[in-house]
Image (cartoon, rainbow, N blue to C red; front, side, top):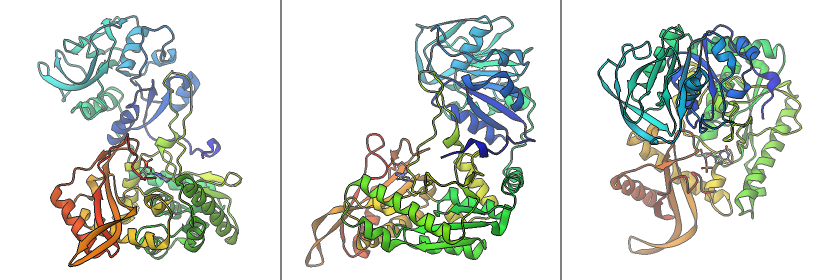
Length: 528
Ligand code: XMP
């Protein structure tokens, strides 16, 4: 849930680049690469960039993203005229290059060989974008994804790199500071892409790279103070990265005006609740309400087996308990949330129509609809890994900052069928062994999420001379960049055997271990 009234101001002092989005799947990566080189940027839909808004944003340059449309179709998207009237440097990527060429008097045609994936181009010239990165005469790897291509350059442009399939792979109009790439410099499969983008922002646009986490921290503290004044702020703490970093940042800004509420539903992993209390109350001296509501949650979950009913029950109780605790501390004027930039980027729909997508995160930390507090969202300009950098800067322990994501409903969605305290305890023990082995093998940071699932079956086994009839568990480990898609982590058999042996030997009640080898799609990461 977001409230545009409480959007922090656009950072006042940073140089910035505007990225106009034409709907490419990888537009966010342009922003990521720019931020990595210390340049603040924002992504706006191409059709939400009127002259007044661009002027107010005052960018030092504009990047036109790729997109699924074809310039050859009449109704396809165009960059606002002001982009080319402003005198600002422009870089067009893929569709962005084609619309740039079309709008400046060149010709774009469809029907040529489609090129997808890795390709090699010959650098036939040089320009500011290639300076110090690509030498004239070299052959360089890039990543292509296009069907149309330019067949005639607009006036003032020349070719800097070409391949058979892409005769206008990189084009430049040095005088007007316009550049276009048919390939995608923002993806890692274009190995020097980040350096090419940096040349655009630093050499062409003149950015110095003044976006640092230290600067962000100082500015955001000032902004929080200005927004909150003498008001009181409540922050729901989950023990996850985002709410933890938001809480510590807020505390640094407003001290005891902040109260954190940690609703413990009894479905956390082993020792997690103790860790939250030790970190935030004892180490950071943050006013923290720790409500152990495990009896209530587990009681109400009793008998529920349908995943959606389980989720809804937990969500409803979470809000009830949160409100109760909030009333006990006398309410507040503001509610803090750890909303991140990917949740608020306005997105372009596939048809090019204007649409604002705000991820409907099925998070238990969701806000009660009727809550009439204003929002403070100090992380809404940051990507997840920037939040981690900020967390480290704030001195938050690595166990929290580098932690795998954990779902709001906790272990409940890792126990298919009815949830009981006994099952949750069993699962916690399995999880501890599994994650300990992952950490010992040095694999924790290479994995997006790793966890165990308690299967609702009992199977026969043999231990020593005796027959066992115990529960089975599944282990899950995936790699991912955003949780939307995921690949199975390829553990060695040796590793899996070691974990399996330890679990069966050390966790009484489990006699069988399986490894889930389903990617997403078609599976989901969690089992429910
Ligand atoms: P799925 O299972 O949908 O998970 O592939 C994708 C990511 O979302 C997390 N997840 C949740 N997070 N509340 C949350 O806060 C939920 O109800 C929930 N369900 C899934 C999951 O852990 C993974 O990172």
